[in-house]
Image (cartoon, rainbow over all chains, first blue to last red; front, side, top):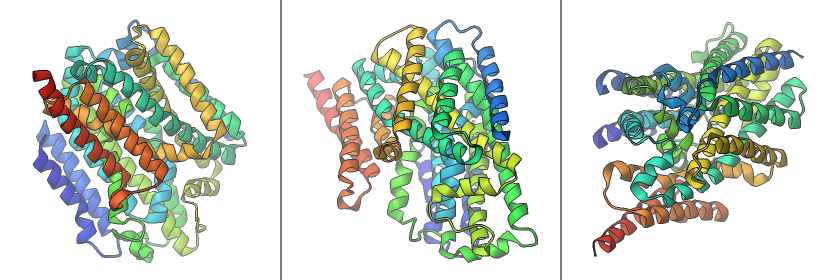
Length: 47
Length: 460
């Protein structure tokens, strides 16, 4: 299991809990980007 | 009337697909896992339709409405966790399944831990998942009753008949093909709902300009999404791909390793788009409430039914039918998987007939539960993912650890399951730690402690 990869993904997902405090869609867009980038990474790099 | 017409068309199309799918079914391998000849695209769609139940369009819309972006983060945590697990384990599980001729998740466990362990697993997953399906039926029957005039009881019966009939007729292929059509239907209707709400609620108004009105609902943590609550919900869902047998069994079905990879990527794409649509819909409706164009709803499960009542009848009927489809696709996949596990793992039957009878019996049990609607059913269904967590050390153990035999596996399952039930009935989180984390910790602790003892015992 790629533990480092898992750790990076989890850390990236919890960023809004500590760093994003603005009352707009930034948290939503940020999470969209993280999930999209990870999906693209899996599609292109993993296999 | 419109709903009944749409429902009849839906039932005819699904039944035609299931009848066509039954051709060529001779063995349990054909019946339960489509003979390992399912394409990557169909595998992805059945995986998605099985995973995304009526919870999405009802529960998650309401959760986003009531709690804001935290609901989106919770659901995406599930998705990235699943992608992480599937991208690593799916090809390995598929290969093990193909080489070993595995049909149920228990077959893989049996080879490593002995034949007794899958019997315990079959009992645990039945206890965990039967209330879960019953709640799905209750939810859709209530929506149908509110929007179509079909009574609650008839709604339950209609759903139960379709669940049993499509699975009974076509086995996995029947379920997978109907899932694929319904999955696309669910996605199209989610897009339509977002477009309609955007047109209806935000004509001449910018959503992005109005969204700051939601205040703390746009950030995490907030009053609702405390770190503890977030952890307690995400831990069991993060491992859903490995611990829920109805999705685990789908890792055996693709026709090739390439199809496995396609399944994972297409499922991820479906999941991301569907999650964005559903949560965005919830946020849109909440902004509309702030603007006075949508009523303030205190009960979050009433958000989608209220929306359905405001929509044009044709769109309302189709969206309501897509919610029904979401429940059916999840329920019949679970029923088929439970039938395979009880039939093969618990009773040791090699006959398709046993599985078919179990599909009927399980559907009757689910219907009775749903009709009685005891209070504890809803709570048990919420608990389902936590109850299933006790299987995780065993599954990971197949790939990573040499410790553990039948005693270890049996005690791990029993202790993890008992912990989940005990904490549920006591309604307590000892030391402030969520029940799901306790189950996770207890299961792994027992697995390793007993595992090393068993290893020494075997050596001596």
